[in-house]
Image 1 (tube, rainbow, N blue to C red):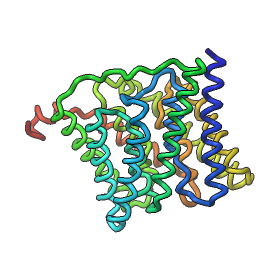
Image 2 (tube, helix red, strand yellow):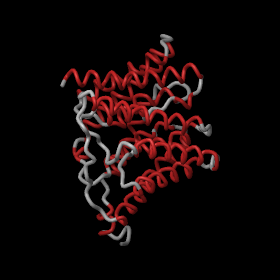
Image 3 (tube, rainbow, N blue to C red):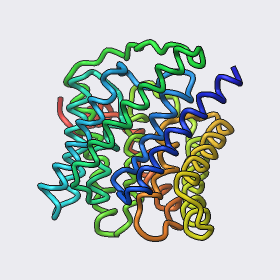
Amino acid sequence: MRYHSFYNDLLALLAVALMAAMAELSGQRAMIYPPIAALATGLLVADHRPWQVRLWQIPVLLTLGALIGTMLEQWLPEVPVVALLMAFLLTGMVLMTFRSTLFPTVATAMLPIILHLTTPLYPLTVALIAMMMVSLNRIAVSRGWKDVDPVNGTKRRSPLDRRRQWLLMAAGILPLLLMAEYGGHAALVAPPLMVVFATLCQPGNALRHHPHRLVRALILTTCCGVIGKEILLEFCGMPLFIVMPLVLLTAFTVLRQCRLLMPPLAALSLLPFVMNGPVWNYPFFALVGAGYLFVCSRTDWRVLRAVGVIRS
């Protein structure tokens, strides 16, 4: 099993190296797609697929998310808070329609708004990367390096409950979006944090009872990204196609040591490579945003209804 893990990690790192090489050769930042780390974790590195989704749906959902994000950035460039909130809710509607929990779709939709990407190259890149990761998953399964992932059933919930939960999650992130916009700290609303938030809000999620593991893993993975960008890339001048796989490999090691192979945490390690300027304060603001979202994830709409904050 240890050898199988090695081969799966190698496939993940090669995929990231290929993406980084293409971005470096073309000079197009839109080709750097940090959620590739989440896909690599969920489809290759983790023992079981953490999402309720069929393989063929993954490129479809992620491409739809990319299109939603780029169109909202084109239509609402002057009101990013509104655009981000709409991206969150629209991707929630898409996921409910497909009965899926592929929450990296949320990060995919929010990323072009935060980075001000309007080029069609971004949705194209997302589609190609998603298809590549699905193909690598099939290769790993065919080689016996990874077991076939069944599409596990999720707890049956009414459409009203799901819609209400997405609306409450959107209400929860709104103050953070406002703080990020008017405080000028985009790391507060790093798209992978929104994926962590959506994951924690799912009924029965056990990670809410282990905040120390989540905090430790988040600090370490974000620090991996900072060291990779500021020291290896900027100071040492190492090529991007070497630095990004090294950062992801370190993030995988950290997550295994923390016993928390959570896909969005891996994506947090690659996010600094698409951020403008120095990113030394990235771990701090990401931790602040995560702390706020963790508190929000502990709020149950049924409790709010019971005390009269919301009505049935």
